[in-house]
Length: 85
Image 1: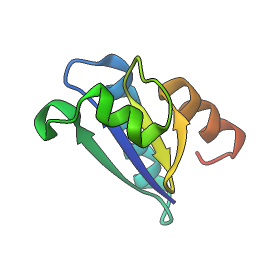
Image 2: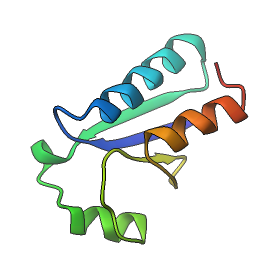
Image 3: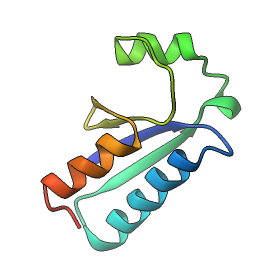
């Protein structure tokens, strides 16, 4: 399972999603993630909207194995539902 998190500095939900991914990396051999700082990479909301396929109001925007799951709350729910931790 590979997760990509599109986030920005100073965003508490981005920090939570990244911390959860770090925990999953430590506990699971089948988990990896990449954090993409949208400011550092020059990614705009419009760029994210093209990738997500719908309007984007917030970050993080999280993908699991290239499928968009939503933000931090949806990612946490996914982890709980699939008993990943």
